[in-house]
View (cartoon, rainbow, N blue to C red):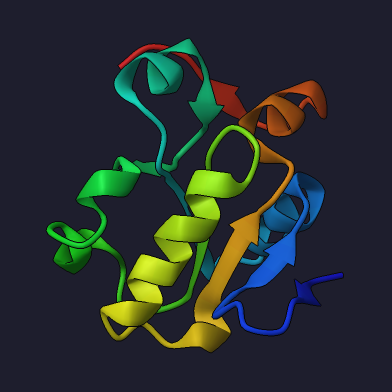
Length: 115
């Protein structure tokens, strides 16, 4: 179940919760890791925008549905969600997949490798 921490403009979720949201068809995963991390393994169907590019590439994020940010351990994805909120994205649609890509892959959820 999504958890809200006071002061954070997003909710925290697990990989399994994120997968369920994606299956509902109203959510997009945004991977904010570095190129070598992305190529080593990422969520299948995710958008790749490194955390430092979230603000300049904000217009590439979907304007509808939930934005589920993911990184390795939940730190950069939380920062990316904060950036998105600062750029005007509604906080009710921002989520941080706090257990990260390794947990997504370890749980056997759909993933891919390479560019």
